[in-house]
Image 1 (cartoon, rainbow, N blue to C red):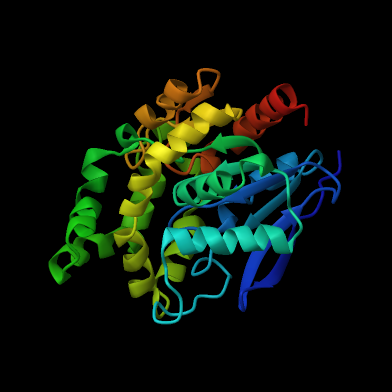
Image 2: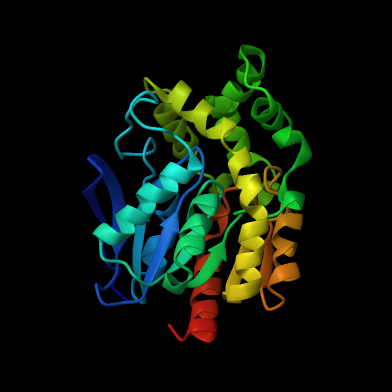
Length: 293
């Protein structure tokens, strides 16, 4: 079977160049892939070819991440509300009015804001360590972030800076991954992420976003109400060893979506690094059964 190519494209949204990956037939059902911190659309590099024969996959780099523009924090208000608004404009610029969402980490509150604004556009949700519940927060990993959210000072900023260091990023990739899967991890992933995070201006960009994360907690009740009222088909494919967003966050979806399908995989926060083929198979089966696409 031939593998369809992945295209690396850009589009201008609100004066900013947004980089994105695209693959699959132009008339196929759309799967919008929203990445998390501290990575980019590169996290989908193994998944996209596995699904491009059936879907049109579109994976943008959020503003400030990957190859998208990274205006300074003085030029752009780096909040999740603004990133979601920019992402909504991105989808409209590309003419996307119907899509399934794949959400991971930061991609979760961004994508779920899209769903709140236009529930009629969202056909299904695939959550891969994309949290929407208090119980999904790993206590140790979130302690410094919660301290920053409560009171942003030089003292609370310093521990959070370590999260985007090379060692901090490598920790996110390796933690919770069983020994037999560790050699599937590509070290280039955390080295490239760390290089992106070390660029000029990233300190204020990332501290701004992390300190704004409390705005996502405030929307958890609205996200959960959306689940209950929309009954959106939801698949959770979750690295069970993740200490940032723990498995209780995946199980919690069933509280509001009794038909949610939950799969805990023997891996960590970046589950696609070790389990892309399994996740692709689960997505294809799920979307075919639950949406007919």
